[in-house]
Length: 329
Image: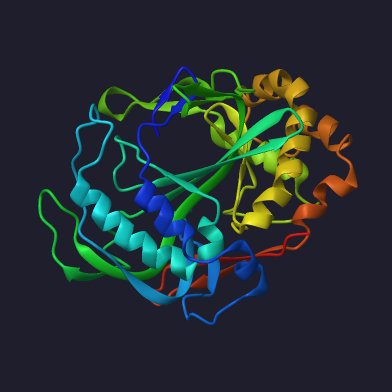
């Protein structure tokens, strides 16, 4: 997702795509569990060994061939690409309608294989962006090839796994031009997270504290002794304090808003202290700043995660995966 000066820019949306995903079922039908049209599908939540989150559906779907290349200077996708996506998301949104309910499609020129969807929420005067991104990249270990790809197109493949990334992101401003939303200015509570480099020559790598901040924030609000790996509810992304959403249904997203809002209000005054300590040491529950804040966290703030369960297992290929069971309050 393109970021300029702490902004996420919207380049293009497609009315027909939005109609396709909104036509799956109404919120009332979703809440009632209506299955009369045969389009509803159950799913379970998982992480693979690479810490990628996916939904395992109760039936497979086909991902058509898609172009690999796109000129990032062109904000509009090719019509053939849009036609393929419309057909695909008619199927996906019918299978998991509650996941896409109320969402609007946006095209990202820099990542054509990761279509994005969003919705805006408010808590008091604060606006939050819910951003869901679907990863359509071909994974040879788990996907079944229907038609081979080329240097210019991905293979057509079949799968029952939908790889997604969903976040609630705090905003400073929704930028509107000509009556249309053009960009989201992110509320950045985190300063520079790059702290140096390691290695030599071609093997130089940057050192960032984003992951350590993610561990710190998540552990702070999880029930004592809970092991949630590979799921970290609170994350450091876009130099902001975000919430990684795995209970994706519309009502559950809304239920998570006050959880993030409260956490940001509590943590922001201490971010300087937290970052200074993490720049010197990896995260540990023995850090001075963590101990101090842990004593200030109210027990009820941890309640939303009491029913989170992570169960490791081996998949059919002998690879370690994790099933996430999560009941909202």
